[in-house]
Image 1 (cartoon, helix red, strand yellow):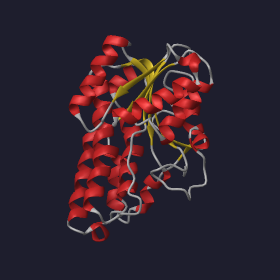
Image 2 (tube, rainbow, N blue to C red):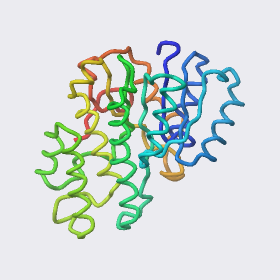
Image 3 (tube, rainbow, N blue to C red):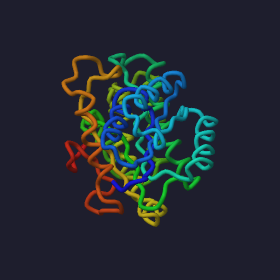
Length: 279
């Protein structure tokens, strides 16, 4: 990664997002890093902890509140970036929620989709609409192997994901899942009951869909989805086998790939630093 590149990580006051930022700070390079969090108090606490641990980062480390489900929060962040930094180079869409086994809870179902799907896509689209990502930049979506399309029992749904060419098609699929979940017909309709899994099917696919966009190609922006592995976090629980540090390897690998679109990698899903499949 070149020096002075600006990296924005969503949902980075804890877990994998925090780990990604710490891994970058350890490198003692000139990256300019933005830590964001929905909860400002918790975000500032994490920012202060990392600032004290890595004092060399003093002039290259920033905090700003960001709730990707809030239009006003997104607008505030974008205006701050314009004023203070101009644009960002690398956007890591890490913010997310899990179901923690509560697969039939409608409130949890709604919250997970609002963050993982609608929030992630809306925030990314706002960044692109406002031209907030520099040429030869990168968009990394933290996906998951839990988003494997084989969890679907409907071949039509699998094909709909595979053939999708716009984010609106992905939003339409998400709305269809919401209706099926609310009507308790997920099994009959061929969906997976696990909302987290479906949300990551959308995220994994969104990387490919984004890579088809003209403005992405025109600005030579690389787009990837990355599976961090099953990592011990508040969201996944203590049984997960990987440490947070181990869960950042794939994302750091993608951040450090040469800039510019590599057609072999563009829009692809990565696991263990290699192109993989989620279907």
